[in-house]
Image (tube, rainbow, N blue to C red):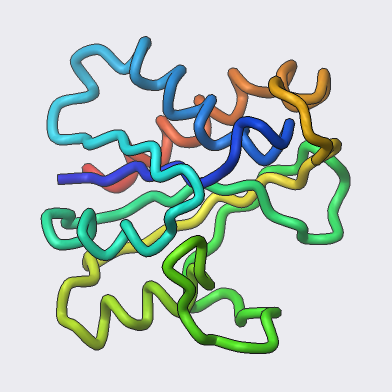
Length: 154
């Protein structure tokens, strides 16, 4: 099974972009959705551990401060990056995603393949709805994730 997990908070504008991507995929995945589990984790990154247990591959989507142009989507694997957090302790609320993947490996429940998509936000205020820039790019983000699902299936 391919897990597509969204992390974020839809009450913080672009922090909810991953959740919107999963919602869009839910509506439009159709036959390609067979063998795919779409999951909105909200801000509970630790819930990835439970979801990992059944997954052969995982695609994790999140808003990410990467010092890129707002709206930029970057694909990477855990091996491509290192955590910028000072502490690698895992919080039950959100946690450090790289630390969660490492914990899953240590527990023997990590999928064979883990891919992240990070999206640079434009706005993180306390309001519902994406910034106009990210809302406009939503179809492109969905297409990228769908391409990744197809790639993983091969």
